[in-house]
Amino acid sequence: MKLEKPKITLRDKARPSDLEAVRKILLSNKYFFDFEIMVAEELIEDWLNRGPVSGYHFFFAEMEDRVVGYACYGPIPCTQKSFDLYWIAVSEELRGHGIGTRILVATEKAILRQGGERIYIETSSRPDYEPTRKFYEKSGYHLAARLEDFYARGDAKLTWEKNLAATAKA
Image 1 (cartoon, rainbow, N blue to C red):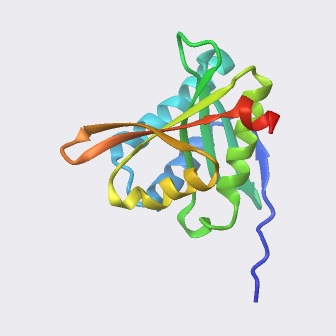
Image 2: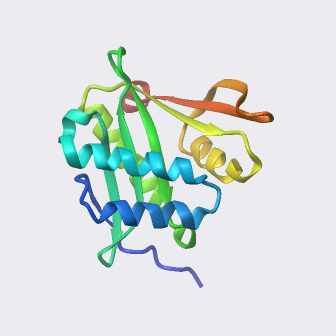
Image 3: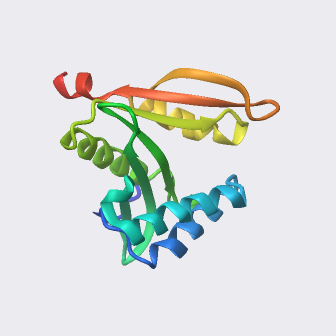
């Protein structure tokens, strides 16, 4: 029996309630450190205080009025057409239902509308990030760089890249 995909709506404006919702999402995944969760919250707070001038943009995936996933992205300072995807996460119990893909596709389209051509994603080489890395590969990203022992001894920073302009022309 095939499960139905959950009905998801996306919005692109942060709300104060998103601070707690994002905290719950990241805690559900069990591999984010407390200081990482604090950074995610700080980015939302910055947007709530300064709006789009903060340089951070968001998509929040909602299911039955509950935030179940989100992404945070923005232009990379001192570049002309490059963007970072700072965060993308889905509640652990809903991973594998296409929510992350919907958020990522919406993010890529928004970046193209904003004149972006390339998107970069940094992640850890730790084993618990393997499903995340496979998600990026499946979504058309390739490993562009590996910096050994970046986060900690034995934990490299992996930078994934996608040329959105080339993908859009294809």
